[in-house]
Length: 343
Length: 134
Image 1 (cartoon, each protein chain N blue to C red):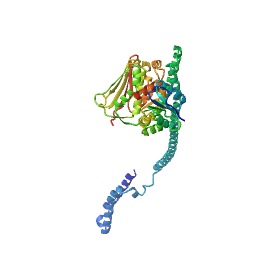
Image 2 (cartoon, chains in turn purple, red; image 1 turned 135 degrees about the vertical axis):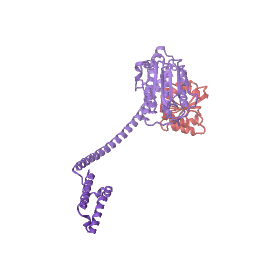
Image 3 (cartoon, each protein chain N blue to C red; image 1 turned 90 degrees about the vertical axis):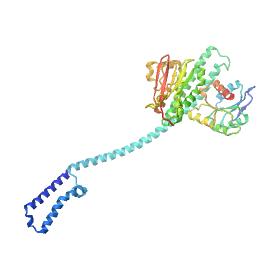
Image 4 (cartoon, each protein chain N blue to C red; image 1 turned 30 degrees about the vertical axis):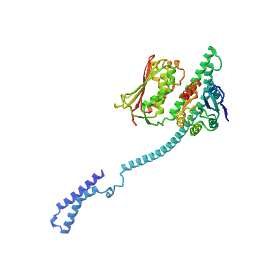
């Protein structure tokens, strides 16, 4: 705006000077005056070229704001002040939150220690109860009538139920306490599955269940995952398959590398059983905390309903997905994927 | 405190050292293992466990981990550092059982880790027999 005004002034000046030359008889002027006028005209014409390139300080009124600008400047100063105040408030809030966060972490740690100690303290007398019932039931302390055995079994099952709940609490606490501590290391998926399956040998034999592992033809390279946590996933899924499959049933673990070389780049592991299945109406609640399906409760009254919640949390924290198919009375298949990040 | 009894059962298969501070659990375990024909040695805290182990020359050690005084992990470390005892299989038998505990005991040389509440004494006998017959 101001720049275009200055240009108009210049143009006016040039017109006046040139007009003066034309009106006056140029040849009659003294040579010194003629030269002065030529220099003046030259400067008037060339001056703007330099003026445009010169910094604003060369313009005498550049530093003085117009009334409109003064208002804008005032507003900007106010906004700046408000921003500075907000920034101070935010910094203070940030410090408060840091302190609160530290306090929460400390409380969480104390909670974990409390859970760990309490559960340990509970497990010891529960072991004593369980062992005693078992010894009496086994006739090691003298003959027991069938009636007595019936009640002893109830007592034994009750102790087992509390032990299962405690174990699930401990697992959940472990998962929550180590929520941000995923130690991804190179693991051979075949070896991981074999290690977990081996732990179940006794239980599979006792229930006469057949477990087979189907694996890819090619040797899979090691994957980057947290072996302790993925073992927990497999343990939970195999434990459920054993619990909810009648004797002489079949459990199949499949390591599927079909999608390893696709855009998805995932390894899929599934655990299938020929068990009781999951009622259709209860399927969407299966992964929620403390949920247990009605038929599962009848077959295995023990359990806290935390297992699949933990499983889903671990799989998703690895960047994988979990889902299942089930037919009541025929069996269930749980699938989970792991991103194929090779070591 | 030290309590040893190497001749509780006649016709014994070998000596098993039970390191356990809880009196009732200790007596139940001892009763079951005696019935199985094992000789027994008993220590009720970590400090005496090593002395009893050196005296009784056990075929296997059943080791609780939370013990008064020296804890079971330290006992395990010292057992594995002892030239005469390092080959004796040690089964950690505890109600601790977080994954870190299991990993730590395994690294220190425990042959097995059993969480008491998750097993019956019959299961324990099976594990011991398996281990000693290997």
